[in-house]
Amino acid sequence: MELTGANSSRASRISSRIGVLGGTFDPVHNGHIGIATAVFNVLELTSVLFVPADRPWMKELSTGPGVSSIDHRMAMVDLAIRDREGFELSTVDADRGRPSYSVDTISDLREVFGHASELFLILGADALEELPRWRDPERLVSMCTLVCVGRPGSGLPEGLPINHPGRKAQFVSGPMLPVSATEIRARESEGLPIDGFVNNSVAAYIEENGLYQ
Ligand code: ATP
Image (tube, rainbow, N blue to C red):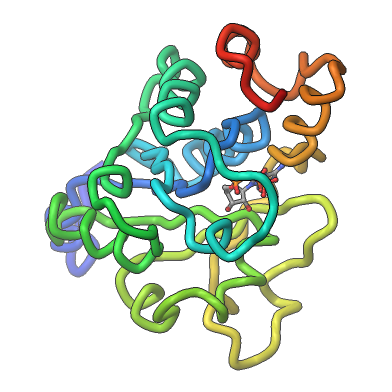
């Protein structure tokens, strides 16, 4: 199909549509893969970057048990996505060496990919609700398109207050999997099976390395 007018000039300027899924990924699980797959397909993205946070700022504030090393978390993401075309591991946060804020992630990726690429920041609905508490949310939303994906227990972007920075996020319903890394860590520490929560190679990695005991 040939495009004309404003659409054709925009199409020629935008060379790729890149999804960005940041997270702690401790561990990466089927909920992450499910939302990345849904957004990749629905928005016809070129790729989805999985960006493990080196030192997630929200978890630095918590008093619970520490987060697994960035090496373990990156290794698990690599295992989970290596056979999935279009999914890539990004070390942009791991390389920075200070607490990870999404505004820095998107700003750094914007430098790497330039303005010929469109960036789509993928957030579960729970994360979107938290956006006002993040660093510089207005600047963040000015640099990318927010995509909110449904998560059991969390609402839709239209349900957010009128002045919420994430209110105009695009919404993709996604697979609505009731899975969280918190539950997987708890199950593993209790010796319960985690099949169906993470892929087999991630489950094997968790066992081999004695994570979450
Ligand atoms: P934890 O339980 O340790 O807080 P988590 O399962 O929420 O972890 P994160 O790595 O913190 O996983 O999440 C990264 C991103 O993926 C966030 O935007 C989060 O909202 C989203 N996400 C995680 N699990 C799901 C899910 N089951 N459905 C939709 N979005 C999800």
